Image (cartoon, rainbow, N blue to C red; front, side, top):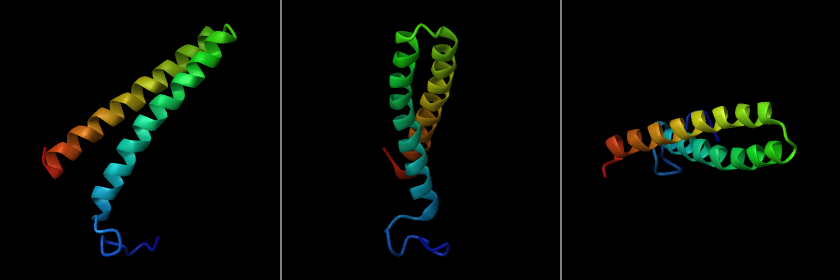
Length: 76
């Protein structure tokens, strides 16, 4: 995508697209990390499972913050 795209092609302003993308990626990452947590637990690696849980929490937090911003900026 060109660095000058401002919504003419997508119909969505860059900042709104960026916020949508960030929110989706945060929530997707939280789901992916669940698999990593289960893999670590299956191998008995509680240190790694805890590491992934912390990362998952941060991804969930980012997703929730993104959803709140989207709601505030784009309406209900």
